[in-house]
Length: 52
Image (cartoon, rainbow, N blue to C red):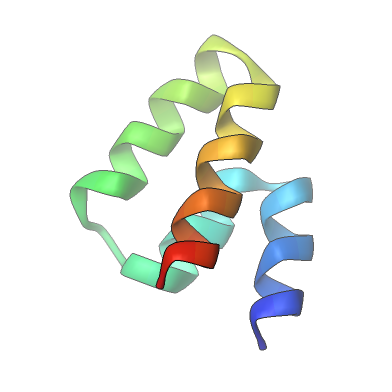
């Protein structure tokens, strides 16, 4: 299941984080990072998914 979440996080980083943590602070941070740059959003999403 984590592999699927990582693939989703590469395509849509906020969705990958949402599937992992819901509407927690990490989700909102990921939206901000994705808006500032796509790559920081991907890195953060993969980190959140791999951490848990």
